[in-house]
Image (cartoon, rainbow, N blue to C red; front, side, top):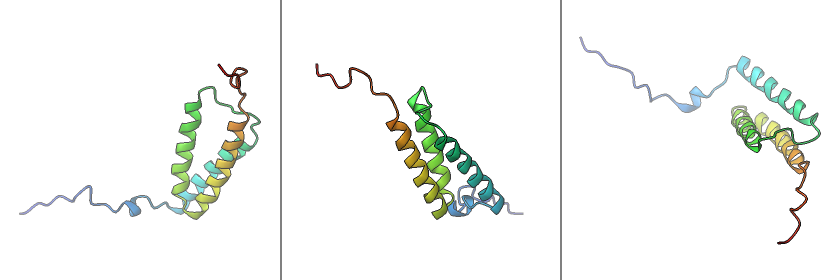
Length: 98
């Protein structure tokens, strides 16, 4: 009797990354909720700027899974992040020349 093992690394990445309708709805809902929260935030809410970077990376990775729909969500997110970054206070001595 011959025994063959399937190649675990032979999976098509596109097939692995395909979302079911339920997964798409859940992901879209989560991203929309995050956008609503960001839009309601007046100023940069993170004390550690790396937290914003991590959120941005995750959001972008998740929007890529949604294709064109994700691109629209990413554009909204990017606009909100630009607004929040601009709301950060500039240190008083930032404009002074040494």
